[in-house]
Image 1 (cartoon, one colour):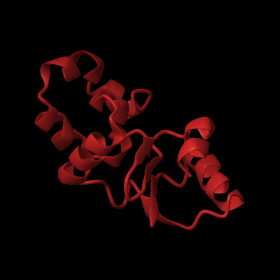
Image 2: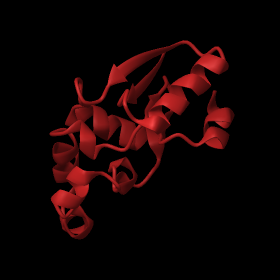
Image 3: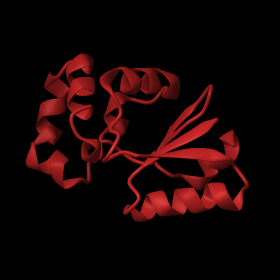
Image 4: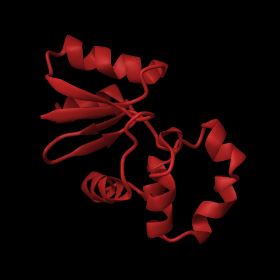
Length: 116
């Protein structure tokens, strides 16, 4: 089963959900604001994705800017970053598409076409 972790009001997330529907992909939806990923989930997804951990941060979000994370992330351990991401769904880049053997962060149609 594929899970899309998303924020329903986000325009990119809406496009991603429409993409899944248009391509007849069955999925479960999880609201990132109501059900934020845990530090353990984030760590697992990070490892599965093969991406740098910074890609899991919503760098254009208000919370990211408010906390001044642009300058602070480099000094934080991965564990501290997972814990921070787990505190607020608005810090997490979305959507995150989680399959049995893959994790995609953000909606890039070409990337999604290769995986789905």
